[in-house]
Length: 409
Image (cartoon, rainbow, N blue to C red; front, side, top):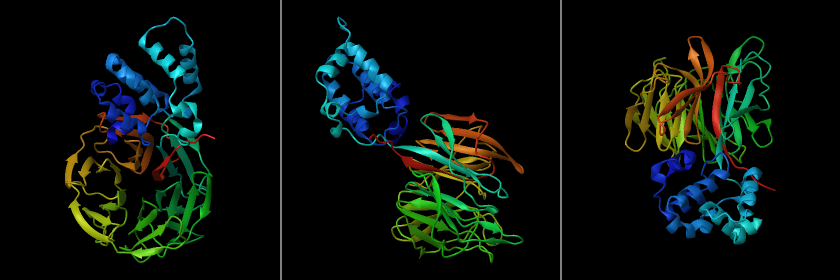
């Protein structure tokens, strides 16, 4: 179901789509999570399904079209429908259905109040990067529907590095880091918040512990920070803050303290993979925090342990990239190697899952990096470089996806 929702444009072109039962089709069309580049595609998918067996499916047309969010159809598409409905003498099935829609539209097409106020939700990608010795670090937004980038309000903080970036709701959080004043580097407890809706930065409540090279991840309406280093050494300390609160609370410490690991959430659980331990050795464990019971377990060990891995989740599985790529099933605890040339012996600066596809940014090359964007889709068996001119300056400090939806006034 999740794959169908995120790959609707591809699903409707497959033979398996044509015999889909009406009930299943209705369930998919009702979903807020149905990802389409335009609502026009939803209307087109209904027509494709009906035209496969018009004799028995034509009577289902108005029911199905009622799930189209008419206020989000493009004007050019609506213009085509109106012109088609006014043509006289045409008797083909498509024209007949459009005329039926014109003469007897579903309630949601007649009364805008019955149509959802919001469009279907979708992921956007935020990328924060740039050299720490500049006056500001640049923030860019990628819109997957249009494939375009836009510059956002930059982070006005010089000489700050090794911080963590996470998203909760419509907010990005930059936590901690290593900061240099005139002469000395030291860990900080800073929290800087970017409001995606207002395109502005503000300062948040300081963490209980200053730290750098740590992990940060959002779970529901909570922001978690995990492990990392202080000026004294690597710590297992975990703390969280509720989105609407102004205080941090201490949580159960990690089973194994690490720095330069990576973390991702799946449901109510947080997974921290690998990192460096107190002795500077690579730790190979997968640590899991159950946020509902505030308890830690070490559930597995990486087949290719590294620090500075890129990790993301997709449909109940973790994907780790760094020197090689692996898939970890969180239900069975099984590892599977991902055999993609674009990922073999490659290291990246950041990755995130966006609308059922994995984006990897900034390929590391020794002490430098390439401004590339690699798109990996395990369901379409696709892995390729889609951009060689990432607009965000390197190095990348964080890339996160933020769920959003469009509204109409």
